[in-house]
Image 1 (cartoon, rainbow, N blue to C red):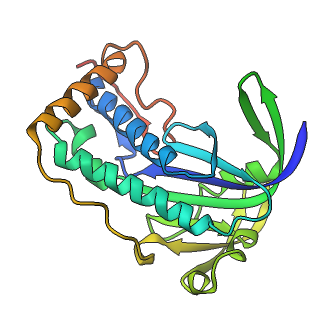
Image 2: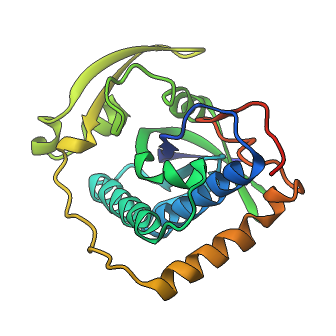
Length: 241
């Protein structure tokens, strides 16, 4: 089991009503929407490597102590997320709650760097260690805004001076870790070029609708439970369509 220095980053999608008491059709569309948004996030991750998908979040890492392009990578991921979210809104043909809430979905990040144990299990790379635990604990925090990058000191110190000036300090008591100095950057104050505007297109809408129904069919039919591993949605009283 190799131990190396690494940057750890989790991109977490939120914004759906936390307690959803809807029929399976709506939850199936919510599941598929988040899956496609995560695909966009992963495609835009650049040199970051995907450790694993965790429900409505993607866990990335980058080996080494030099990560000067961290802010640019976060910016690229967020722009891809916003672009895909806007496409969902423009192409929306379904009125279920899972589709109607798409415009309210948000993306937040937590970042830490430290020592990580890497273990190969068949074709997968498992990450373990105290620093892996810490970055996951950071998802439950006291940041007062909905879209942000929350980072520990070691990541904060690598930011460009002009970005560090935009951050706010916030000390946390993380379970099993203790008092930890953190800093957050409100992404709504972070300059970001808007996604390319997307005009209406009936063929594209119809194709998007068809693919949504096909990809979510296994959830609608009850072959798989929709949203069961989402950390930002608690599903109760799921009914059949």
